[in-house]
Image (cartoon, rainbow, N blue to C red; front, top):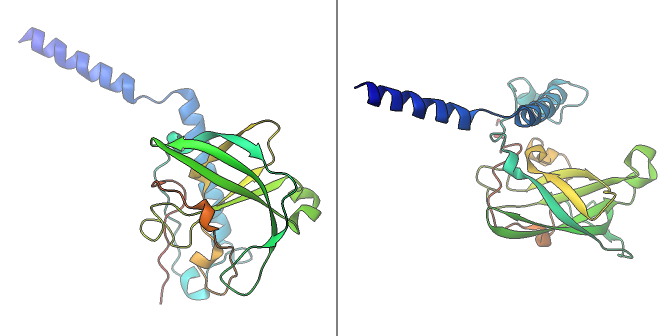
Length: 207
């Protein structure tokens, strides 16, 4: 009986050890939670919120996928210079001008992935957006757990040939909350053949 009891305690200790988060994991979780809190504060601010009046009155907070460090990937970055400007399709007739800035390559859940990175040619005229990069994408959760129109990631120009892509910070276009907005549609080339359970979940509009 004593041996069984000792074994039980040993298993419990091992389980507790394996489930315990490292200081790095805790710091990362806190970082993402702070990012989530910031977004929710913006949505609750009448001056910044994209919500319709009807949805604003019942808004309690966005839903997010569980924070998972595996969706913070270090991708190989390749610059694509001398790309032509083009009008990116949106949910309206508006065609904001972008250039393809580069490509990133990474592996997620055993699937080889590639995404194009874009640079808005109007935003870079503003000092604070001079190094701003944009990744609109669709994955296997789009139209299910995630918004059907895809999600967005904001990045900064890297200094080397690698780039951190954190899908835990992926957010919905404003069109997911209010049909009056004009939102870039992720180009077909930015369709991932893998489910990315990270970032903001789909939002149900009130009618």
